[in-house]
Each structure stands twice: as structure tokens, then as C-alpha cells.
Length: 580
Image (spheres, rainbow, N blue to C red):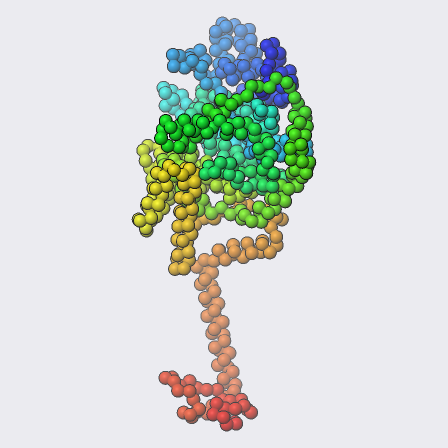
């Protein structure tokens, strides 16, 4: 609540936030109405203590005082302020400190952090607005499709939350190393209302299981907002060879990433020792989950102490700009936005914003299958959103397109394993060639190559197979249905010639059986009309020149069927060389 600063005992929260240089927290979420709060209201110290620390109503002091005045005993008056089960009833031999909130962190990519720290104030505010919109959209998606409330013995009863989640958001501006790091801590209360109106606890396991999918959705939303409002595009950047690339703003000097990410470098320096110890113990390189755990260990070991002096955002930005200018020159800093816009034009001219759902499904299932073997829908959803980020490069995607890709994967390329898990169906991926079904199996067992490198090889092999099948279908004139989703774009952004070509393609694709039949009838009518015209001309010439003479055998071309020849025009040579 006070950033990385220290709050002396007895100092009010708001004063401590001012000294630490962080803004006060604010409430958000659709569940606020049930508590009488409004989105955007400031999070006071007492409200946070009651709701996030004790599981009681944020206005419990007033409610308890009213109950005491009405004649209730103190225990009953306090019980009226508790949301769900009292915290003292939740504690037990196996639960020392029950969960009352979850901290979800929303952090923009590295190049966006550098841009936010170095650009002018107007552009900085736009980037902060993009952060707000992407965060709120992601939280709303969690409320709608993930958050469930549980009650009964062992949580056997489950249902979507009635109103929504209750979230307190705290914004921070810098990392522990003093470098720019715009990020939000969204503290989600576990208290929510059941469908019958009673208060209970949100299933924290459901939200935590979907953290990765929510993170990819936040990145996708943030990219779209930045591209729409600032005209910047995105491109992949490989952080570690063989590992999954990250999306960064095109045109921003990559040296700024190293200047801004000193904490990342500290972690990278400590990581090889931990990886070597793991390989010695286990006998193989760490997988995706183990690598993440080792990364967290390196972060804990290299965590610097919190800074003690307070700085405002304006002071921080002045320090950051001066540091970047000393390191890379004034041109790199002052022309950052200009170069990003120029690079965006080049990226969007080279990359078409077309999402082929069939190819996206193949790419998604190949990557997830090689990386995990068995998986759930949330793993497919996270990879589908990464695919959209890579393909669209910041252009908007159609709502529900990520779920459409996942549904295509589940319907066409997976088979169940166990109660809740699934895996890739190799017979569906290679329906007519059983020998090639073994292409993916060695990739899953080859531990000498990084997992993501093997996943990309598998995705490339399957994508080539789909292209080959489509070419064969086109050559044999057999239509193979597949869905291609094109994000909607304003007409003003399309050149006239491109818009015309797009309209022509749409009209061609709309051709159906009725249109073909209508065209055939038109050709037949035109042929009949031409035949009648030729017959009328022949009759007119016969009346004008008399009966047509029969050709001699020498004057005709031998053939199986002798066709009548028209009389030669006056003054022209006949085929035999005479003059008529």
C-alpha cells in the first residue's frame, strides 16, 4: 500500500503514500455495489484492514455501532459485520493464516516501460490509460468466465459469483533497483456473494490456475490499446535462445531494455548456478515449470533492500531521462516515439493482420502438446492468445476469437486422458499417413533441445502438412472448408485499391450454386440468340444471291462430314484460285 517505502508506526497511510511517491489505492470490480462502495473510491487504511485483513465489511465500524445502539450484544453486533464465516472459525491446526486476498500483478512489457519513463507527459498519460484499460478488461474477464464461489462440505457446491469481484488496486512506478517499472497490484478479496445472496469465499484455486492465461490476455489487450492510441506496432524479441520470445514495441532501441532491466540481469547472473545444481540432481535440464521455480529462487536470492528515500514521479522521470541521455545520447531519448511510429509502418506493411483459425489451432495444439504432453483448456487458451499477439502485432482481434481457436483444437485435434486432461490426437493431425504420426513423438522425448525450440519445430511440421493438404485439395478441385478471421478495421485506413480488391474477393467467395445456374442460363440464352442471328443472315444472303452452289470435290477439304460452304464474296479468290 506504500510501495517499497517504509511507514513509521503511527504515520497515517495517506501521508506515507505521499512520502513514498505512490498514489493512493482505489476500489474496482463489479462486486463493490454489494458493499456500498463505488469504483474509483480511495482505499482507506481502515477499509483495507477490515476487508482484506479480517474478512469484514469495509464499513464495519458504523454497522457495529448501529447494532449496539439497537440493543444487540457485542458478539452479535460484530457477527453482523462479518462476510461469510468469521476468520477465527477458519483457523485450525492445518490453517494458521487463512487466505483473505490474492495479489495479481499487471506489468507492461520492457519496451513499454522504457517508453513510459522517457517520453513526454502526454504520451506517458496515454500509456497509463492503456495500462488501466488492459487491467480492467482482464479483471472483468476473470469475473465473467473464471471466478466461482464455493460452499458446503469441501466446497462441493460451486456457482459463478452473483455480483462480481472486489478489488483494491495499488500502482507502483519503480522496481527495487530504482529503475522504471510501471505496474499495478490488484488485491482481490476472496469475499463474494453466492447466488442466494449469502456471503462466501471465492475459489482461489480457479483464479490461480488461470493466472498465465489472464497474463497473456492482459498483454494482448495492452498491445491493442497502445497500437490504437499511439500508432505503434509490436514484434517478437528472443530473450534467451531456445526460450519463448516476448512481444516488444518495434523501433525502440533494444539497449534501453538492458538499461531498464537491471534486476533481470541480476537474476540472469544468479540463475546458471541454480540450473547447474538442478541438472546435477535430476540428470536433465529443467522443464518449463522447474525453470520458472528456479527463476523465482534467483529473484529471491538477489532481491535488494527497499530504498529509504522518497521520490515523486516527476523526480523519478527526470533522473531516468538524465541517465538514459548519458548512456545512449539525447537522440535516442527524444526521437523514441518518432522512431516507433516509423517502425510500425514497416511492420504493418509486412505483416498481414489475418488470423487463419485452422492454422492457429494446429500451431496452438503443437506447442502445448510438446511443452506439456497432457493439458487443459486454460493452457490452450494462453497459447492461443500468444498466437494472436504474434499474428496481429497490436491490431484488434475479434471478441471470442481466442475461444474459437481453442474450440477448434478441442473438437478436431485432441483426445481425453483421465478425467480433466486431454492430449493431442495424432491420428487427427495425420489422418491418412500413419507413418508421419511419429514426427511429434521424438520431439517430446528429446531433452537435449529446449522445450520451446522443439515445440516450434513441431508446429512448423504440422503447418506445412496443412498447407500441403490445402494445395492438394485445390489441385483436385475439392473444396476443404476452413475459417479465416480478419479483424475489423476502419475503412479510412484501407487504400481504395485494397478496399476494392477486398470487396472483389468477398464477392467471389459468395458465389454459390444459384449463381452458377444463373450464369449457365445466361450463356445458353446468348448462344441461342447468336444462332438465330446467323440463320437470319444466311436466309437474307440466299434471297439476294440465289441458291447456294454445291462445291466440287476438288474445292472442298476432305472430311468425314461435308459442311455447306457460304458463297464467296464478289471479287475475292476462291480456294481453287479462280475468280467468281
